[in-house]
Image (cartoon, rainbow over the protein chains, first blue to last red):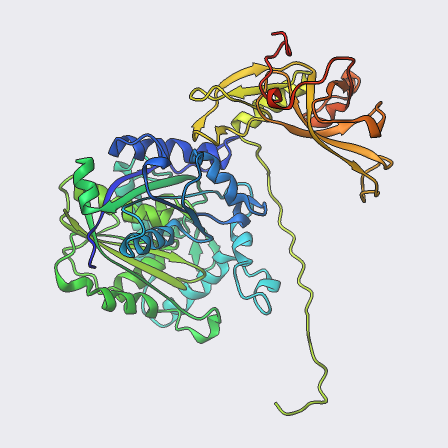
Length: 353
Length: 172
């Protein structure tokens, strides 16, 4: 990248199973205030660009994302954009904006209340509208098909999936924002009944309400603000066909392509935060990314510990940022996904400033 | 391909039904709870002092939470209006009727409501109106607790003062 892009602030709400009466604006505002405080600015007027990620289907209202702008203080008018995607892609748009020289700083945020609707059913409507969406195939069933393929081909075993869950729950004990945490053994987890065969409930990320926010900027702006930062040295994404029958669901071709494009193994990775909404998908990602034993995977617990739709991808980047700024890591990988069975994948590489 | 005798499919039917438990928000929930008791309230921005009705949780101009409740009066001023001359499906009101943007005394923003007991041709911007509430036993968590607004025998408010009156009206 010609322009050094730095992450200077990140905040995420707790992952709540039900945020009660709070609406989206009320979920967003505390996270925005937190990132403003981290860099010492007063509101969105103090950055050059704002981009958000959300999905109106989660709220069940057309143009629901527009109400999110009420959290920004957009008087006088600001430069603002939105993606109907996870906010990791809003981050991508903000990076482009800065790289093109159109902005020196940007605020990025993602939010959702997934609890009001039936999330797996709502997500069925992101499938292709002619063949799959009218069949109402829910996101858990599709993930179960994928897990079944992997088990039957002997690529993974049920105990591998349970080990992913056990690790997530254990790491999440240290994560105050996590929804699910605790010490569970593989054998404990395998005693639980099947939910959507071969998945157990614990193999599926929980339904969570909340928001996260981030501020990025050029290196000179970060120095002007005089705040600790992590450098965002690479970000890229690839998407696979919406026709599930044409994909090899046991691997992630798109993730592999992004990893190659970004040369993620050009130096060692201390941590990797992966957006795997289902336990077996973490195994797919680990393999497609060719992660090595020295890489600490999902130290936050990942999204099996709490899954903020439209914010969890941005939060993966934020979790890596936090650990770099805290000195716990010097180089890390963040991953975000979207669509059924890891259809669309984004990677970001962060390094110590 | 090439078989031009086949019927062309130019559309399919795929209706979408999704159920949601709608939540209004913490601030709108307080507004609706007061409305249930027959009290119209707004919320004040701690930064710019503007009072919003109905409150949505934030001051969109400043981007901060509006947490102070302000009890508004029953009186309001017409900010804008239209005469609806066509029937609206599902709406029991007989046209022609008036839909108006009304700013209640004490608030800086308007809401949309109906006007009645008025001569439609005489309705004007700046006109003073007051709320006509339904009987108390019919009150719910809804704006139609107020059946409509009717004209008041008070002098018009100059356009530049609309949205800048205190809770006690022009004198307050």
